[in-house]
Image 1 (cartoon, helix red, strand yellow):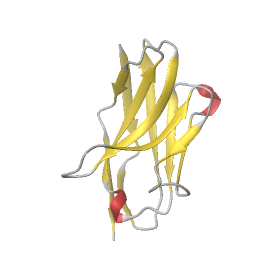
Image 2 (cartoon, helix red, strand yellow; image 1 turned 120 degrees about the vertical axis):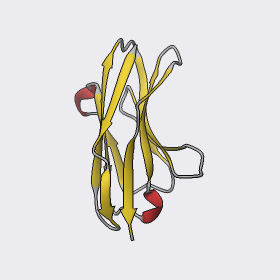
Image 3 (cartoon, one colour; image 1 turned 90 degrees about the vertical axis):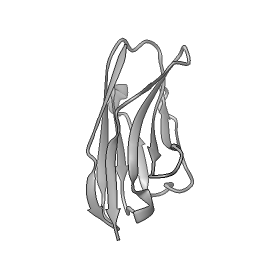
Image 4 (tube, rainbow, N blue to C red; image 1 turned 45 degrees about the vertical axis):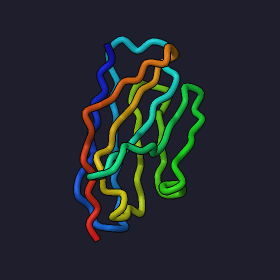
Length: 116
């Protein structure tokens, strides 16, 4: 089993920054990719960013140029640096891990609130 623990959420003013962390532990076999998703109240969960085992990244259009995903030294900790935050970024942010067997794992989520 794989455990994912997010941290780093909080309340910030528009234009501010936050860094989210996701620590993965447990039986991680052949990691394929790790990523971030978010869910705002009354909305479906949506993709934010992803980083593959080889280090390739991709982002949702809404966060390109503002958010940066990283996984230093390909360890089991992933980060999401969020700059120039906007009120529409307010959501619960979830860490995701996809292994080579196409099994998804999710963290419990961390709240990010951006005030205007």
